Image 1 (tube, helix red, strand yellow):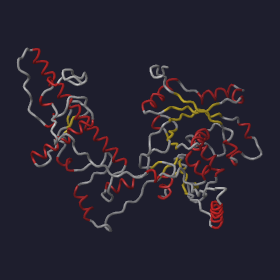
Image 2 (image 1 turned 120 degrees about the vertical axis):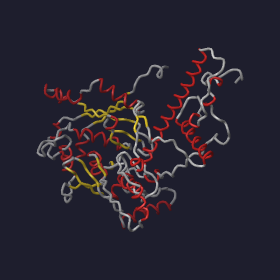
Image 3 (image 1 turned 45 degrees about the vertical axis):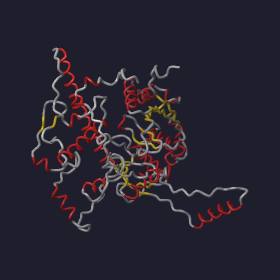
Image 4 (image 1 turned 90 degrees about the horizontal axis):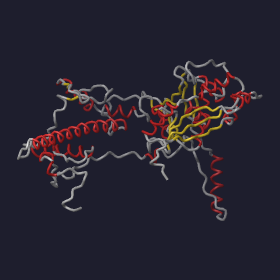
Length: 483
């Protein structure tokens, strides 16, 4: 670039106050970055897609006799000592209409192999015990929730610093413009040099604000020999207004571990550190794994890796009785157990979609936080974000549902969705970078259930009556879809 030509995005160097220019000394050019803790090997932890023991056979090569011998030996080994399938146990709570797993081994296995369930005291992965131990100082490292909370706190503080720097620059420019209008021959008197104002006037980012904060700490260490942090606890601005809050010395002496955590004084933490390993209190696991009804029935019927007990936790609920039980509890309050099974039951419609996508290899999770029914992950929530958001809508295409006015009214009530609803859901998914998929489930007529064998005992014949159709809904942008 020619030396006389200035970049249009960069401000004029002569108009920038001297107190706001960045020093280019080699000492403060590249501040040291904080080392990150080692991450767990998720590829090894979640290497199995389902909680099912798989024993693959060796490859069979017809022209190699040794491969045939190895295959025969494998079959013989399986016949002599057949592998045992791990079947985990859970219980059904009729008060909450949900399924719970309390065994720690079963909780870890169901989460690591297929991402089934949700921790009752956690956001997703059941990690309450690790968080509680780390809060008490019994275990080193940080959990995912703590990392997220710390990252949000840092971003909030850096955004406040960035806003303060931009405000200082605007004030300096206003002073310079006022002096120019008054026809002053000399430039505006420069304010005193302060480490906090030592940032560039380029486009501010969180990374630059963080580097500026590290530079301030380094200068404080070089000048005074100790770190002098600004006293932000004495006076803080709330929501950008003029109101301030002052904290007493008693409150400042306490340590807040989180927004909802218990306050611990430094004396209590010191006493726990002085106690020996035998004297330290043990943390009991108070968290259990909460399974949705669709996940529980898929583990029982689709994989055979789970058995569900009743409220007494003594009797096992058979699969033929579990399906009507979950259908009756699909609404609140639960329906009577003697009522008939409707083909358009809420649980049946949602489970058909869940079974459909699970059979195709997708990791299906609840999408209630995004206003949809399901979220589809390619490998799992620890690897990447969900790619698709699923909305389930029943479809009554059979002629049986159009014979009477009562049936047509019932179908129109179940299917009707307004354009406002579709626009709101699609806009939310566009903001979180997910593709909205409207999944239509064709409901069969109830005439097909009048057979000699009750349909509840033949679940495969029941599910084969349904058909699933997907339709992707995307926002049409003319500039992006132009030929």
